[in-house]
Length: 223
Image (cartoon, rainbow, N blue to C red; front, side, top):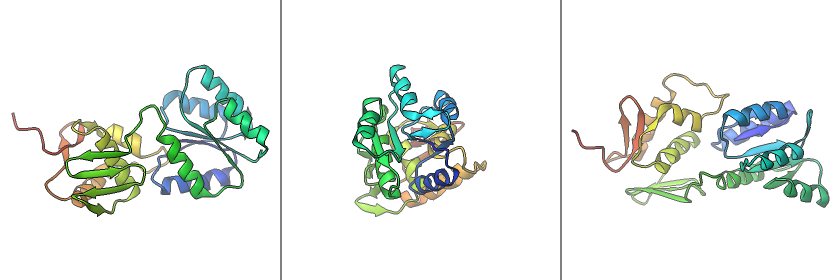
């Protein structure tokens, strides 16, 4: 997701809370930065502070809609009248949260918007006896609840959504880590090793040499 907020302290706190909830968060401080980020990245959700140095984000979002961009948008704002909220929805917003707000509510609203994104993920993903509840963020194998970190869940969700297909290392890093994360060369490999251990046997998470990883009931048979 993309967070567009010019108040550095608020942006830092909100981004930290969203990352702690398992979301990959890119940050922008104004509309030009947001425009550049949206040009190069397909986000599942964008959170805009409404009043930014370069103008009202509502006007920018209205232009996004005219150009055919359907990315879900939530406005954060201190403007709390009914007329302000109606305007936000009428000009392209999908949700509207008034400052001050409760961070858990923001996280819940962002997750809801991410599920509306064009590449919609089913509420429950299944691979063999593995069940991933994307709404409640719960994973069970053989009916047993597994305890995963937010990052492990993110990687598993991407792999399950593309079950039986090879997903590249580069795509997993792009989808599950944000631009502020520390991208050590082996961070994905370490996480996959931990995830394999938690998933147990028989193995579901397989390495595709030279490409990345595949989540499948069985590996492709040897040629």
